[in-house]
Image 1 (cartoon, rainbow, N blue to C red):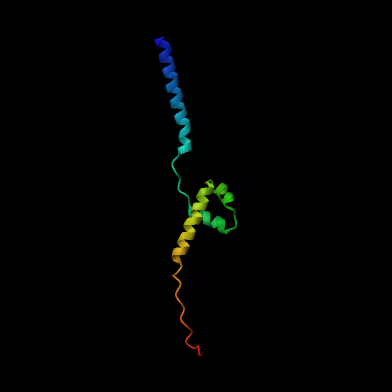
Image 2: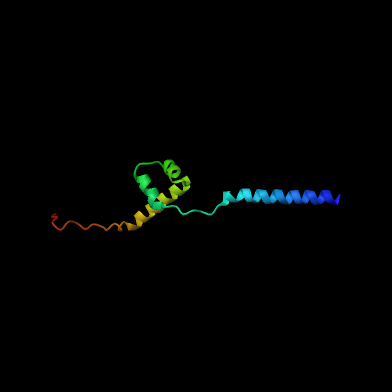
Length: 91
């Protein structure tokens, strides 16, 4: 009986260890995405799905890069200045 218990325990441990090593790639460390390259592809007219496939990244990474680029573009725009009446205007 002890041998059977030990064998079951060893098998369970081996199975658990094997499944853990198989699951590791799913939780791989995030690789850095080159958002400049993503934006060049998007500006060339490619769709996000195509860009993701070509650069071997997820579509969510493509959308994240696009969002970051839009945010940067908004920050670069100067605040709208209220326009004064033209100096040569007569009533």
